[in-house]
Amino acid sequence: KPLVFSGVQPTGNLHLGNYLGAIRKFVALQESNDCIYCVVDLHSITAQLVHEDLIGQIRSIAAAFIASGIDPEKHIVFNQSAVPQHAELAWVFNCVARIGWMNRMTQFKDKAGKDRENASLGLLAYPSLMAADILVYRATHVPVGDDQKQHLELARDIAMKFNLDFKEKIRATGTGVDIVVGEEPVHAYFPMVEPMIEGPAPRVMSLRDGTKKMSKSDPSDLSRINLMDDAEAISKKIRKAKTDPDALPSETEGLKGRPEADNLVGIYAALADTSKANVLAQFGGQQFSAFKPALIDLAVSVLSPVTTEMRRLMDDTAHIDAILRKGGERARARAEKTMAEVADIIGFLR
Ligand code: ATP
Ligand code: MG
Image 1 (spheres, rainbow, N blue to C red):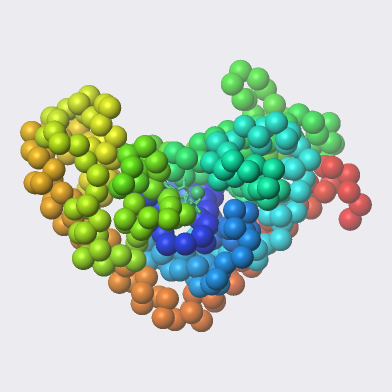
Image 2: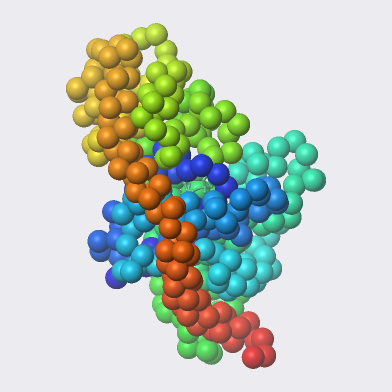
Protein backbone atom coordinates (compact mmCIF):
# COMPACT_ATOMS: atom_id res chain seq x y z
CA LYS A 1 0.00 0.00 0.00
CA PRO A 2 1.34 3.50 -0.80
CA LEU A 3 2.23 5.53 2.28
CA VAL A 4 0.56 8.95 2.52
CA PHE A 5 1.79 11.72 4.82
CA SER A 6 0.49 15.25 5.33
CA GLY A 7 0.32 17.92 8.02
CA VAL A 8 -1.59 21.00 9.11
CA GLN A 9 -0.20 23.75 11.35
CA PRO A 10 -1.99 24.69 14.58
CA THR A 11 -1.74 28.38 13.68
CA GLY A 12 -5.37 29.46 14.01
CA ASN A 13 -8.81 28.81 12.66
CA LEU A 14 -9.02 26.18 9.97
CA HIS A 15 -10.69 27.48 6.85
CA LEU A 16 -12.32 26.27 3.67
CA GLY A 17 -8.94 26.29 1.86
CA ASN A 18 -7.48 23.85 4.41
CA TYR A 19 -10.60 21.72 4.17
CA LEU A 20 -10.86 21.53 0.37
CA GLY A 21 -7.13 21.70 -0.40
CA ALA A 22 -6.02 19.25 2.26
CA ILE A 23 -8.31 17.63 4.85
CA ARG A 24 -10.97 16.38 2.45
CA LYS A 25 -8.28 14.73 0.36
CA PHE A 26 -6.86 13.12 3.51
CA VAL A 27 -10.24 11.53 4.12
CA ALA A 28 -10.60 10.23 0.56
CA LEU A 29 -7.12 8.67 0.57
CA GLN A 30 -7.80 6.43 3.58
CA GLU A 31 -9.59 3.81 1.53
CA SER A 32 -6.62 2.46 -0.40
CA ASN A 33 -3.54 3.82 1.40
CA ASP A 34 -1.70 3.70 4.68
CA CYS A 35 -1.99 7.29 6.00
CA ILE A 36 -0.16 9.41 8.57
CA TYR A 37 -1.73 12.79 9.39
CA CYS A 38 0.13 15.16 11.61
CA VAL A 39 -0.61 18.36 13.52
CA VAL A 40 2.68 20.10 12.77
CA ASP A 41 3.24 22.07 15.95
CA LEU A 42 7.00 22.47 15.40
CA HIS A 43 6.18 24.38 12.21
CA SER A 44 3.72 26.63 14.00
CA ILE A 45 6.46 28.46 15.93
CA THR A 46 8.43 29.45 12.81
CA ALA A 47 6.44 32.56 11.84
CA GLN A 48 5.24 33.47 15.34
CA LEU A 49 7.00 32.13 18.40
CA VAL A 50 4.48 32.76 21.17
CA HIS A 51 0.90 31.47 20.83
CA GLU A 52 -1.84 32.19 23.29
CA ASP A 53 -3.41 28.72 23.32
CA LEU A 54 -1.19 26.37 21.34
CA ILE A 55 -2.50 23.26 23.10
CA GLY A 56 -6.08 24.26 22.26
CA GLN A 57 -5.09 24.85 18.62
CA ILE A 58 -3.39 21.45 18.42
CA ARG A 59 -6.50 19.76 19.79
CA SER A 60 -8.75 21.63 17.40
CA ILE A 61 -6.79 20.50 14.31
CA ALA A 62 -6.93 16.91 15.57
CA ALA A 63 -10.68 17.33 16.18
CA ALA A 64 -11.11 18.66 12.62
CA PHE A 65 -9.31 15.63 11.19
CA ILE A 66 -11.53 13.23 13.08
CA ALA A 67 -14.75 15.21 12.56
CA SER A 68 -14.06 15.21 8.81
CA GLY A 69 -13.89 11.42 8.80
CA ILE A 70 -10.28 10.41 9.41
CA ASP A 71 -10.09 7.12 11.30
CA PRO A 72 -7.32 7.35 13.93
CA GLU A 73 -7.47 3.61 14.60
CA LYS A 74 -6.82 2.48 11.03
CA HIS A 75 -4.44 5.34 10.29
CA ILE A 76 -2.14 7.52 12.41
CA VAL A 77 -3.06 10.95 13.82
CA PHE A 78 -0.53 12.67 16.10
CA ASN A 79 1.26 15.91 16.85
CA GLN A 80 4.74 16.43 15.45
CA SER A 81 6.58 17.37 18.65
CA ALA A 82 5.68 13.97 20.13
CA VAL A 83 8.11 12.37 17.67
CA PRO A 84 11.55 13.95 18.15
CA GLN A 85 12.88 12.20 15.03
CA HIS A 86 11.21 14.87 12.85
CA ALA A 87 13.52 17.52 14.28
CA GLU A 88 16.47 15.14 14.27
CA LEU A 89 16.14 14.34 10.57
CA ALA A 90 15.49 18.02 9.84
CA TRP A 91 18.92 18.76 11.29
CA VAL A 92 20.51 16.30 8.88
CA PHE A 93 18.53 17.85 6.02
CA ASN A 94 19.70 21.33 7.09
CA CYS A 95 23.15 20.05 6.28
CA VAL A 96 22.05 18.46 2.99
CA ALA A 97 20.06 21.45 1.67
CA ARG A 98 21.77 24.64 0.46
CA ILE A 99 20.99 28.13 1.75
CA GLY A 100 20.29 29.23 -1.83
CA TRP A 101 17.51 26.66 -2.14
CA MET A 102 15.77 28.07 0.92
CA ASN A 103 16.20 31.68 -0.18
CA ARG A 104 14.21 30.95 -3.33
CA MET A 105 11.08 29.74 -1.49
CA THR A 106 8.10 32.02 -2.13
CA GLN A 107 6.44 31.12 1.20
CA PHE A 108 9.57 32.33 3.01
CA LYS A 109 9.55 35.58 1.03
CA ASP A 110 5.83 36.12 1.72
CA LYS A 111 5.98 35.29 5.41
CA ALA A 112 9.28 37.05 6.14
CA GLY A 113 8.04 40.25 4.48
CA LYS A 114 10.41 43.15 3.95
CA ASP A 115 12.56 42.66 7.04
CA ARG A 116 14.00 39.32 5.95
CA GLU A 117 17.12 39.58 8.12
CA ASN A 118 14.84 39.58 11.14
CA ALA A 119 12.81 36.46 10.23
CA SER A 120 13.50 33.40 12.38
CA LEU A 121 16.07 30.91 11.16
CA GLY A 122 13.30 28.33 11.61
CA LEU A 123 11.14 30.10 9.02
CA LEU A 124 13.98 29.85 6.52
CA ALA A 125 14.52 26.16 7.34
CA TYR A 126 10.78 25.35 7.27
CA PRO A 127 11.00 23.29 4.03
CA SER A 128 13.79 21.20 5.50
CA LEU A 129 11.60 20.22 8.47
CA MET A 130 8.72 19.56 6.07
CA ALA A 131 10.93 17.21 4.03
CA ALA A 132 11.87 15.45 7.26
CA ASP A 133 8.20 15.09 8.28
CA ILE A 134 7.52 13.13 5.12
CA LEU A 135 10.78 11.25 4.70
CA VAL A 136 11.16 10.12 8.31
CA TYR A 137 8.39 7.67 7.32
CA ARG A 138 9.76 7.29 3.80
CA ALA A 139 6.26 8.30 2.65
CA THR A 140 5.68 8.69 -1.08
CA HIS A 141 2.35 10.52 -1.48
CA VAL A 142 1.62 13.94 -0.05
CA PRO A 143 -1.83 15.56 -0.42
CA VAL A 144 -1.47 19.34 -0.11
CA GLY A 145 -2.80 22.60 -1.51
CA ASP A 146 -1.11 24.21 -4.49
CA ASP A 147 0.83 26.62 -2.24
CA GLN A 148 3.00 23.70 -1.02
CA LYS A 149 4.12 22.57 -4.47
CA GLN A 150 7.47 24.36 -4.28
CA HIS A 151 8.23 22.86 -0.87
CA LEU A 152 7.59 19.37 -2.19
CA GLU A 153 9.94 19.94 -5.11
CA LEU A 154 12.54 20.92 -2.54
CA ALA A 155 11.83 17.72 -0.59
CA ARG A 156 12.65 15.78 -3.75
CA ASP A 157 15.87 17.75 -4.19
CA ILE A 158 16.87 17.01 -0.60
CA ALA A 159 16.08 13.30 -0.96
CA MET A 160 18.01 13.15 -4.24
CA LYS A 161 21.07 14.90 -2.84
CA PHE A 162 21.10 12.65 0.24
CA ASN A 163 20.82 9.56 -1.98
CA LEU A 164 23.68 10.70 -4.23
CA ASP A 165 25.98 12.05 -1.49
CA PHE A 166 25.65 8.83 0.54
CA LYS A 167 25.40 6.43 -2.41
CA GLU A 168 28.25 4.18 -1.25
CA LYS A 169 27.10 4.11 2.37
CA ILE A 170 23.54 3.29 1.35
CA ARG A 171 24.87 0.31 -0.60
CA ALA A 172 27.19 -0.76 2.19
CA THR A 173 24.40 -0.72 4.78
CA GLY A 174 21.97 -2.54 2.45
CA THR A 175 19.21 -0.07 3.22
CA GLY A 176 18.47 1.25 -0.28
CA VAL A 177 16.45 0.26 -3.33
CA ASP A 178 17.04 0.85 -7.05
CA ILE A 179 14.70 3.46 -8.51
CA VAL A 180 14.64 5.49 -11.71
CA VAL A 181 14.32 9.27 -11.46
CA GLY A 182 13.55 10.76 -14.88
CA GLU A 183 15.87 8.58 -16.96
CA GLU A 184 18.50 8.20 -14.29
CA PRO A 185 18.90 5.01 -12.21
CA VAL A 186 19.51 5.85 -8.54
CA HIS A 187 20.23 3.62 -5.57
CA ALA A 188 17.98 5.41 -3.11
CA TYR A 189 17.38 5.40 0.61
CA PHE A 190 14.74 8.13 0.47
CA PRO A 191 11.94 7.84 -2.13
CA MET A 192 10.89 10.65 -4.47
CA VAL A 193 7.71 12.15 -3.03
CA GLU A 194 4.68 12.71 -5.25
CA PRO A 195 2.59 15.81 -4.56
CA MET A 196 -1.19 15.26 -4.81
CA ILE A 197 -2.57 18.68 -5.68
CA GLU A 198 -5.29 18.02 -8.26
CA GLY A 199 -8.99 18.87 -7.80
CA PRO A 200 -11.22 21.85 -8.66
CA ALA A 201 -9.94 23.99 -5.73
CA PRO A 202 -6.20 23.35 -5.26
CA ARG A 203 -5.77 26.97 -4.18
CA VAL A 204 -8.80 28.57 -2.56
CA MET A 205 -8.44 32.34 -2.73
CA SER A 206 -9.36 35.04 -0.23
CA LEU A 207 -13.01 36.14 -0.44
CA ARG A 208 -11.79 39.76 -0.33
CA ASP A 209 -9.02 39.51 -2.92
CA GLY A 210 -9.03 36.89 -5.68
CA THR A 211 -5.26 37.14 -6.11
CA LYS A 212 -4.36 36.18 -2.50
CA LYS A 213 -4.72 32.70 -1.07
CA MET A 214 -7.21 32.12 1.73
CA SER A 215 -5.06 31.89 4.86
CA LYS A 216 -5.34 31.33 8.60
CA SER A 217 -3.01 34.22 9.17
CA ASP A 218 -4.95 36.82 7.09
CA PRO A 219 -6.00 39.55 9.54
CA SER A 220 -9.43 39.93 7.88
CA ASP A 221 -11.90 37.31 9.09
CA LEU A 222 -14.14 38.19 6.12
CA SER A 223 -11.42 36.86 3.82
CA ARG A 224 -12.07 33.26 4.81
CA ILE A 225 -14.77 30.79 5.76
CA ASN A 226 -13.70 29.12 8.99
CA LEU A 227 -14.57 25.53 9.68
CA MET A 228 -16.11 26.72 12.96
CA ASP A 229 -18.31 29.41 11.34
CA ASP A 230 -22.06 28.99 11.81
CA ALA A 231 -24.60 29.26 8.97
CA GLU A 232 -25.11 32.95 9.60
CA ALA A 233 -21.40 33.77 9.37
CA ILE A 234 -20.98 31.67 6.21
CA SER A 235 -23.93 33.41 4.64
CA LYS A 236 -22.64 36.87 5.51
CA LYS A 237 -19.13 36.18 4.21
CA ILE A 238 -20.31 34.75 0.89
CA ARG A 239 -22.80 37.61 0.39
CA LYS A 240 -19.99 40.10 1.03
CA ALA A 241 -17.46 38.19 -1.10
CA LYS A 242 -15.89 40.33 -3.80
CA THR A 243 -17.17 39.67 -7.35
CA ASP A 244 -17.30 41.45 -10.69
CA PRO A 245 -20.51 42.84 -12.24
CA ASP A 246 -20.82 40.28 -15.07
CA ALA A 247 -22.96 37.16 -15.24
CA LEU A 248 -21.28 33.75 -14.89
CA PRO A 249 -19.86 32.41 -18.16
CA SER A 250 -21.13 29.10 -19.52
CA GLU A 251 -17.65 27.68 -20.11
CA THR A 252 -14.48 27.58 -17.98
CA GLU A 253 -12.63 29.59 -20.66
CA GLY A 254 -14.77 32.58 -19.62
CA LEU A 255 -13.33 32.50 -16.06
CA LYS A 256 -9.92 33.69 -17.33
CA GLY A 257 -9.06 37.12 -15.96
CA ARG A 258 -11.92 36.89 -13.42
CA PRO A 259 -10.16 35.59 -10.30
CA GLU A 260 -13.07 36.13 -7.88
CA ALA A 261 -15.59 34.41 -10.17
CA ASP A 262 -13.12 31.58 -10.80
CA ASN A 263 -12.62 31.16 -7.07
CA LEU A 264 -16.32 30.95 -6.17
CA VAL A 265 -17.03 28.51 -9.01
CA GLY A 266 -14.07 26.39 -7.93
CA ILE A 267 -15.33 26.37 -4.33
CA TYR A 268 -18.79 25.31 -5.49
CA ALA A 269 -17.33 22.54 -7.66
CA ALA A 270 -15.14 21.21 -4.86
CA LEU A 271 -17.97 21.26 -2.31
CA ALA A 272 -20.32 19.51 -4.75
CA ASP A 273 -17.58 17.06 -5.75
CA THR A 274 -17.86 17.94 -9.41
CA SER A 275 -15.96 19.99 -12.02
CA LYS A 276 -16.07 23.73 -12.74
CA ALA A 277 -17.41 22.89 -16.23
CA ASN A 278 -20.40 21.13 -14.65
CA VAL A 279 -21.07 24.06 -12.33
CA LEU A 280 -21.01 26.47 -15.26
CA ALA A 281 -23.28 24.22 -17.30
CA GLN A 282 -25.80 24.73 -14.48
CA PHE A 283 -25.19 28.41 -13.59
CA GLY A 284 -23.78 29.93 -16.82
CA GLY A 285 -25.61 33.15 -17.75
CA GLN A 286 -26.86 33.74 -14.18
CA GLN A 287 -25.88 36.67 -11.96
CA PHE A 288 -23.96 36.32 -8.69
CA SER A 289 -27.16 37.34 -6.92
CA ALA A 290 -28.55 33.96 -7.98
CA PHE A 291 -25.35 31.95 -7.65
CA LYS A 292 -24.35 33.13 -4.17
CA PRO A 293 -27.46 31.81 -2.36
CA ALA A 294 -26.92 28.39 -3.95
CA LEU A 295 -23.28 28.48 -2.84
CA ILE A 296 -24.31 29.45 0.70
CA ASP A 297 -26.75 26.52 0.94
CA LEU A 298 -24.16 24.11 -0.36
CA ALA A 299 -21.38 25.38 1.94
CA VAL A 300 -23.63 25.22 5.00
CA SER A 301 -24.86 21.72 4.20
CA VAL A 302 -21.32 20.37 3.71
CA LEU A 303 -19.65 22.18 6.60
CA SER A 304 -22.25 22.13 9.36
CA PRO A 305 -22.00 18.40 10.18
CA VAL A 306 -18.22 18.78 10.42
CA THR A 307 -18.55 21.85 12.66
CA THR A 308 -21.03 20.13 14.96
CA GLU A 309 -18.84 17.06 15.34
CA MET A 310 -15.74 19.21 15.89
CA ARG A 311 -17.46 21.07 18.73
CA ARG A 312 -18.54 17.78 20.30
CA LEU A 313 -15.02 16.33 20.12
CA MET A 314 -13.41 19.46 21.53
CA ASP A 315 -15.55 19.16 24.66
CA ASP A 316 -13.74 15.93 25.47
CA THR A 317 -10.07 16.93 25.53
CA ALA A 318 -9.04 13.72 27.33
CA HIS A 319 -10.31 11.70 24.37
CA ILE A 320 -8.45 13.84 21.82
CA ASP A 321 -5.28 13.74 23.90
CA ALA A 322 -5.47 9.95 24.15
CA ILE A 323 -5.81 9.65 20.36
CA LEU A 324 -2.79 11.91 19.82
CA ARG A 325 -0.71 10.08 22.41
CA LYS A 326 -1.40 6.69 20.87
CA GLY A 327 -0.80 8.03 17.37
CA GLY A 328 2.48 9.53 18.54
CA GLU A 329 3.67 6.20 19.91
CA ARG A 330 2.88 4.38 16.66
CA ALA A 331 4.54 7.09 14.58
CA ARG A 332 7.62 7.12 16.80
CA ALA A 333 8.19 3.40 16.39
CA ARG A 334 8.41 3.89 12.62
CA ALA A 335 10.49 7.05 12.79
CA GLU A 336 13.03 5.45 15.17
CA LYS A 337 13.75 2.76 12.60
CA THR A 338 14.47 5.34 9.89
CA MET A 339 16.71 7.43 12.15
CA ALA A 340 18.74 4.39 13.19
CA GLU A 341 19.34 3.60 9.52
CA VAL A 342 20.17 7.23 8.74
CA ALA A 343 22.70 7.25 11.60
CA ASP A 344 24.35 4.14 10.13
CA ILE A 345 24.38 5.65 6.63
CA ILE A 346 25.98 8.88 7.84
CA GLY A 347 28.36 7.03 10.17
CA PHE A 348 27.28 8.27 13.59
CA LEU A 349 28.29 6.03 16.47
CA ARG A 350 25.28 4.56 18.23
P1 ATP B 1 -0.70 29.68 7.63
O1 ATP B 1 -1.22 30.98 7.10
O2 ATP B 1 -0.41 29.68 9.09
O3 ATP B 1 0.44 29.12 6.80
P2 ATP B 1 -2.48 27.97 6.15
O4 ATP B 1 -3.90 28.35 6.00
O5 ATP B 1 -1.57 28.15 4.99
O6 ATP B 1 -1.92 28.68 7.46
P3 ATP B 1 -1.24 25.41 6.69
O7 ATP B 1 -1.37 24.70 7.99
O8 ATP B 1 0.03 26.12 6.37
O9 ATP B 1 -2.48 26.44 6.59
O10 ATP B 1 -1.55 24.39 5.53
C1 ATP B 1 -2.29 23.18 5.73
C2 ATP B 1 -2.72 22.60 4.40
O11 ATP B 1 -3.74 23.43 3.82
C3 ATP B 1 -1.60 22.54 3.35
O12 ATP B 1 -1.74 21.33 2.62
C4 ATP B 1 -1.88 23.71 2.47
O13 ATP B 1 -1.39 23.52 1.15
C5 ATP B 1 -3.39 23.75 2.49
N1 ATP B 1 -3.89 25.09 2.20
C6 ATP B 1 -3.66 26.21 2.92
N2 ATP B 1 -4.30 27.26 2.39
C7 ATP B 1 -4.95 26.78 1.28
C8 ATP B 1 -5.77 27.38 0.30
N3 ATP B 1 -6.06 28.68 0.35
N4 ATP B 1 -6.29 26.60 -0.68
C9 ATP B 1 -5.99 25.28 -0.74
N5 ATP B 1 -5.22 24.65 0.16
C10 ATP B 1 -4.69 25.39 1.16
MG1 MG C 1 0.50 27.75 5.15
